[in-house]
Amino acid sequence: MSGDHDVDHHAEAESYAALRARALESLLVEKGLATTDAIDEIVRTYEQDIGPLNGAKVVARAWVDPDYKRRLLDDGTAAIAELGFGGAEGAEIVVLESTPQVHNVVVCTLCSCYPWPVLGLPPSWYKDAAYRSRVVREPRAVLGEFGLTVDESKEIRVWDSTASLRYMVLPERPHGTADLPEEELVELVTRDSMIGVGLARSKPGVASTPDPKKPN
Ligand code: FE
Image (cartoon, rainbow, N blue to C red; front, top):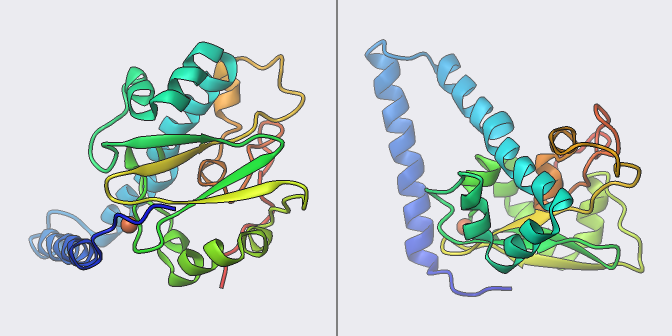
C-alpha cells in the first residue's frame, strides 16, 4: 500500500477538475456547441471502448510475447508506450501480474487515481467511498459482490493507486485459449479484469463477471 498522497492537495485538485468539467459542459450546452447527450456519449465511449481497449491490447501482447511481458512487468510505462499508449493520468504505470497463487486488485483509497491511457475513465463505482474503503478491509467479500469468487487458497493483494503511480492488472490468460491469435485474445480482456474485480473472458462473447453489481 502506498502512502504518498498529499491529501488536501489531491482532494482539492480532484474537485477543481470536476468543477471545471461541469462549468465547461454548461458553457458548451449554453452556447449550443454541444448537447449533454453528446457529451455523455463521448464520456461513455472513452470509458467503455477506447480506454479499456488499449489496456486489452497490452494484455493480449503480454500473453503471446514473453519478452514483452517481461518488459511490461519491469517497466509498465515504457512497455505500454511501445504500443503507442501514454500521456495524461498515466505518467507512471505499474503492471501487476495475477497468477494461480496471487490475485491483484486495484483501488485508489483517497479519490479515483486510475491509469487513463490504458483503461480510459474510471467507472463510477471506482470512485465510491464504499469500494475505496471496503476493498482494502474485506477484498474477498467485495470481489464476491462483483460476482468474482477467489479461492481461499489464493492470496489477494490490494494496491493503492496515487496520482503519481497508477496500477493496472495483467489478468491470467484464460484456459483453452492457446490457439487464439493475439487479436482474438484482445476481445477476452475486460476492463474489470484489468482492475482486478473480474477475470478475462474464457471465450469470445462470454461475460467475465456474471452480472457485476456495485458494492455497497
Ligand atoms: Fe486518487
